Image (cartoon, rainbow, N blue to C red):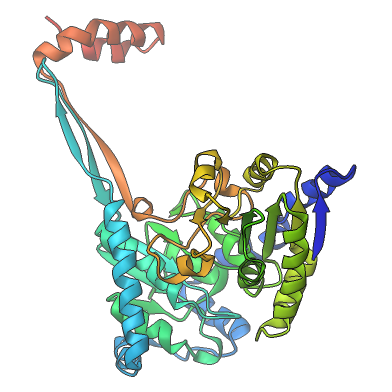
Length: 429
């Protein structure tokens, strides 16, 4: 894992290269994804079954084979041991409680002229959730995507997940039962995104598609956006850590590895003004690396996309981290809350030595579906707002339109829209 120093002459060149960590070659796969979408739109289930045979190693014999039986979900839930079931329920309750607090509200306001203005919050009718199931299965991703949709009041939730060799992770099935999922389909990749965006004979068309995935999933979401809404275009997972000399190297090393073990494209970046800490973290990291089940994946991530940056001050460290705009940001300093106002760009902010990033992945409550690759500059975490839409409410009284109608008509006239102008004027005294 390379150590960079901000005082070095070539630092900015290397830092700019680091900022490109989230780049995905969508252009290279866009023609493939475009063809997949075209086939799903024109052939429906026939194309789905063909794609499953090609990518997942089994071919459904009938349309009904595409759907997961709810009895399978129930059986998987019933088979959980007591501790695992309790952990799943604890995560569910904490995630639900957090998202209930962020739910937008409808409101109505009345002014002195008798006008009524407001906002009506309405959930989408049908949401599509993509849950990865390739290199690893992520039941936590189902909770993080389904619960805000449930809190928002979505009528129907559709789940798609790849099922290699016609097999689905049992904990994922159990989580689906806990969330009350009725429509879950054994479809993955760009095919799943297309099926949810446009509908097939079996998979209903949805209004919004959310959930993480590989470059094919991300590209498909980008291409169907506009026909349906999406949450964001997410890339490989990443962590940024701001730390001072008070941080414990063992904590930081394993936290960096917690992202590196996701996949080879993940990035882990520590920024600190302490040279001593930087060297201790790197040494500890390599000691811990050999103990991981996914050592080869983590090693490639750390060596090709990881970095430790030593700065001249904490102020410079914060400036650089804001440019990185990481998906996950740990602030491990003597007084982390003092830095909070200075942090402008991060998907989720973890404050203090006892708040490791994985606690947010599973149990804290805030959503773990977060913007990556620097897109935290303009994207927000997945929330209830991804599953609702807002309608403006306007009701003018006679007194109210008389008070502002002339100004409105003048603006319409100035824009050359005479019917607009007359529409207002014929209502005035």
